[in-house]
Structure formats: C-alpha cells, structure tokens
Amino acid sequence: MNVYHDWLPAGVEQTIKIRKDNPELPLEAPLLHMACMLEGEPRLQDLMVSLWRSSQFGCCNTLRGQHAVLVEAARLHAHQASKDSLSRTACIHNLSTAGQGWLSTYQWWGIMEKDASGDLQFSGKRYAIKGWSSKLQASLQLVQDATVAMNSIEVPRTLAQWQAAYECASNLDLGAATSRHAKPMLIRTWMIVEMRARGIKQLVATKPMMVDAFAKLVPDQCKWVHSFGAGHAAIQDVWAAQGYKSPPELYAMHTFFAGHPVVQRYKAAWINASELHLKAGMAAYRAAWGWAPTPAVLLPIVYNAMA
Picture 1 (cartoon, helix red, strand yellow):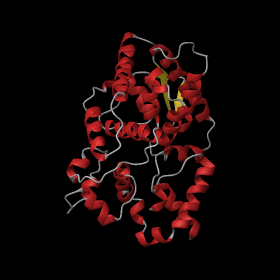
Picture 2 (tube, rainbow, N blue to C red):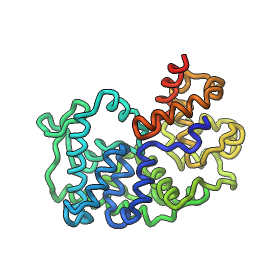
Picture 3 (cartoon, rainbow, N blue to C red):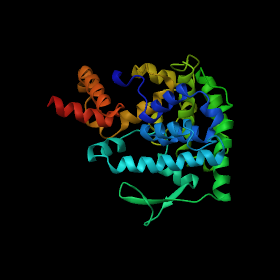
Picture 4 (cartoon, helix red, strand yellow):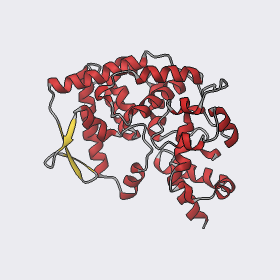
C-alpha cells in the first residue's frame, strides 16, 4: 500500500519529533529517553518531556528526578484517561506501539504494580506507585546505563551498518529496560529514531543480504519475513519480486501488516484501486486523533464508508 510507504507507529513518530526538538534528552535524561521509546502513546510521551523541561522537579536529570517525572506523568495521564470517551480509548488501544507499552514498562522497571486498592486506574484495573528503594534505584540505573551504552553505537546509514549496530545493541544487558519479546522492537525503534533525527530517510541496501540474516535484524516474531521470503536467497530479491520500495528498515513491519488477519480480508485489487480513498481516510483519522492508524484499523473504516 503506497499510503503506508514510510508510515511509522504513532509512538515512534512522536519519539522522533521529541528527539529532534530536544537533542539534549538522550545525554541529560537517558532514562526518560528510553521511556519515550518504549511508551508508544504520544500523550504520555509529551507529558514526560513537558514535565522534564519544567522546573517543577528541580534537578530532573538525576535518576531520582527522572523517576519523579515518570511518576507524575503517570498520575496526570491517569487523570486524562479517566475523562476519555469510549471511542478515544478504543483509538488509543489500536496504536501500534514502539515496544511493550507504558503500563508494562512501568511494571517491568518496578515503578508501579497491580494493586486492587491502588489510586491509579487504567482499563478497569488499579495500580499503585511503589516507593523509592535501593532495589528500584538499581533497576532504573541498569536501564539508564543500557540507554547510555546504546546511544554510543554508530547510527547506521546502510543495511550492513544496521546489522553491525543491531548486533551490538543485542549484546547489551538491557536487564530491566525491556522484556525479551520487546527487545528487538526497542532496538529497531532506537535506530529509526536516531536515523530520522539525523535526516537519514532510509537505509542504503544495495549489497545483497541473505533472507535468514536479515530476519535476525528485525522484529519478526510471527516469521512473516521468512514466509514472504520463501524461495528467495537474498532479501533484495524478495523486495524486487514484491515491488517493495519502502525503507528496508520498515520491511518487517510491512510483512506484519500484510499477514494481519484483518488486512487479509481485503483483496489486493480492492486495496490498490482504493488508494485515493485510503489516503483521504488516513488524513481524516490523523486530523481527528493526532496520529495515523494501522492498516488493520484504516481498511475497515474506508471499506465501510465506500459500501
């Protein structure tokens, strides 16, 4: 779908904007930078950055100061979410996140936990903010150290450089930073954010790379890269056969879209013939909600509107 040529999940798109507007963030507040990459929800990302830039928390660049920002952002976000309409809540749930999502991140890091008597409520469940402790400090320090190490890796411009950077980042002890399943998405998000922040629109991928080798460098839990690459040796041969001209670093995401059960309900001929309607539908959705929808959300909307 041409309409999704360089589309990015809302959380990734917002992180790129934050990175461009706040070039000092990765250096001065690495923990918050990592949180932005993992959260996936633009409103919460904006809250964290606006709180960080304010003087409300004093020295926000210390570990405890960054923790205070994260906690206050969660409280303010809970207040916002409590006022959301059902349609907006459904829209937010349909975000294609950068990683594991903010609730999982906060729990994984040890900032909050499920608690029936907790004072924060999201999606019908209650959570409590955990107090500061040496255990929490150690957990957040590990996250911050991993972020600093990741930011020292050379940002790729070619597919070969992407491979080197991905393998280097994969060897980092991310510990409490992310779950095992979200780690590949985090690494891809970090590289895309840093590339776009430097004006690198896409990787140069002229040197052949085997399909199996490429599949190890992207999130491919559903094995769609292997499925679409069956019968081909090099990933460039796959792209040529499919007419794929979008950025190489987004290919795994495009295969996930193509294999999604909702997307598979619609024939390729209809999708191709409806390109103008899809573009209009995407523009309308972005105007209404602030971000562009995934194909699984957009296709039913446009199809029903055209019926």
